[in-house]
Image (tube, rainbow, N blue to C red; front, side, top):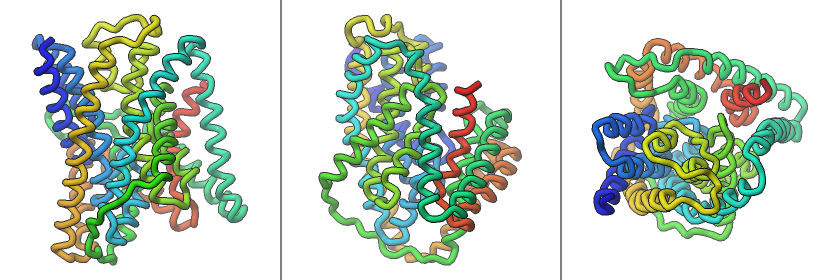
Length: 416
């Protein structure tokens, strides 16, 4: 393998991850599809694996920008929409993105000892026994969410139960629908989760801000505090946990993080940035430690390279090479994400436009993207999701209960 070519592919992956992260509805799995095609032409599988890893890591840095400025979340950033939107309307959008980016960067370091810990853990216990923990975690998380509402009033807890039930049933219906109804003439792998999360979290926030005005965005110098380090460590641990659990996305870890940082938006955003990046790295580690890829992109890597037996007494050299590709991507993504955030901030500050005008433009753009990527079925899904997404503020409960759209299908998967 040509090491220079390997580094170039890792960098190219970071550039592609910039595109997927900044473009609502486009996922890293689309890069994995490209890698499979290039692999069929005889291209070096290690270089292509570096391409996918670079895109995975960069995506976790950049995907907070559209959720902040456009209100277009994915499952990984859905719960960040409200605090990030609050930062935007306070003129501190750059601060919010800076904190999420710091969280992502710190998790690159915090994930290293966690990888070693998982390697040692699965040297002494079986992966099958580890999976039984999942439903216990989810049930405990659900009870904690309702407990938080019960501290306000019994009425709030009942309203929260209603929202949770509606979102959970909606999630079960969505998971049983065909997932590729796009109008684009190629299979780009976009699922109905894009209109689901756009409707549940993005559009209701945009609609509530039609009469708002964006203040001048402050591009301030920000100091990383001690509590930010603790938040990043917590987010890394949450992200690493779901990185090893089948069927569990980092959206579940965001719910856990939200429970602990409910009243602290800054530390929550740091934790959420760490969740997403740690989940990507531990997804990769799971391929080498337990030989079970936890995402489609990592599964593609496993199909292209020859894997050593899991837990064979040492961590494969291939993993360290791909880890190097991840760090190359992170080294590129950290400054470029902040540059992009400053650029968006300056554009908004120059126009001094009423946010209602921008919101209407974003709404139209999102609906067009939903139509192109998921067809008329996606438009129907986003309409229903929007109605459900408007329930929490009307009923006075936390939006976190909308994550039942993921929690319920995953829990029932494990129970059945």
